[in-house]
Amino acid sequence: MSRSSRRSLRTAAALVATAAAASLFTAAPQAQATSSMGGQITRSEVLARAQYWVDNHVPYNQGGYAPDPQGSTYREDCSGYVSMAWHLNSSLVTSTLPSVSTHENFSDLKSGDILDYTAEHTFLFANWTNQSNGDFTYYAESNPNDPTHGPNSANINSSSLEGWPTSYYGAYRYNNIVDDAAPRPARVAAGDFNGDGKLDVVGVDANSNMQYYPGNGAGSVSGPGTPMLGTTGLWANFKAVAAGDFTGTGHTGVAGIDANNNMMFYTGDGAGHLSGGINMMPGTNGLWANFKAITAGDFTGTGHLGIAGIDANNNMMFYPGDGTGHLGTGIPMLGTSGLWAGFKAITAGDFTGTG
View 1 (spheres, rainbow, N blue to C red):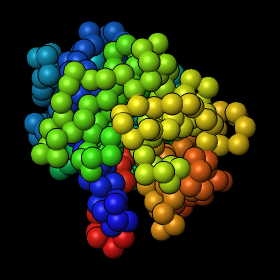
View 2: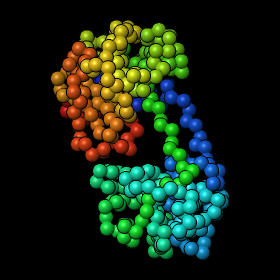
View 3: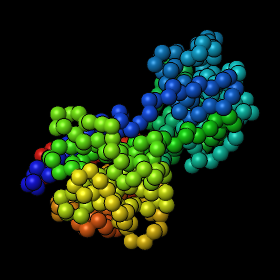
View 4: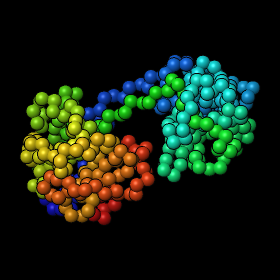
């Protein structure tokens, strides 16, 4: 197969893998459980409730009350808005919100926390967009001329926020807020695993085995799947996988982050099977412990596949391959500012036809 053909196949594989992740190997999405009044609430639900008033264009009116998604009503002002987002039993005021929350440092702010000037104003912290620079987004009810709005952009180092000196605010965390469960990456990949020039799909099934589904070249795969490496649940604790020809043999294999947070590579035989399992990085130091997503591609034009991924600092790191199933030292691909903090998945390919 020509290099251009292999490149086209890898580009198509990137797109197929994305689609496959949404179908074959992910469970149907669960309905988001809603909190009870005054009970525990996740950060994502707090932001969803805040967005509800934005979507419904709730005006600022200290004498008025507006419903939350369940029909309970809250006062249409800054503290009533926070009370609604936190799903409190009643509408508190700026001076009493600290009674149900804990003071914290600005640097510790997370989604669903608040900045509260107890004498006058409060607003809801949404997300850091660049914490090292102090950039963040927020939701607020401000005054009759500025009804429910967000997510708006601001900077924690500004002299004023929402019309008041920043130094007047304290950061607070609702006592009943809880972090959302970390999403499990879709452990699925696409590639030509049987050498017929058609894309196939592989993925980790409910029994933690790697299953293989051959493609027909017309947008479909056939099943039931075939185990690629036994049926012993080998892939139970793998956090992410990527497919590619990392050894230059023309056979697609699978790389993945294992239970020990090392990048392991399993070679393909060109017939839909895998073998071995070698550590792609020197040593067994758990380098990949907090990577959120990975993808494979030839980012250097050498013909050798490497791996790119979002690391613990939310930077995109690239580890070049040597063509023998090993990776070199990681390098940042786009600065070190945590740009990829909010990204949930990544894929690679030649989308512009430039090679």
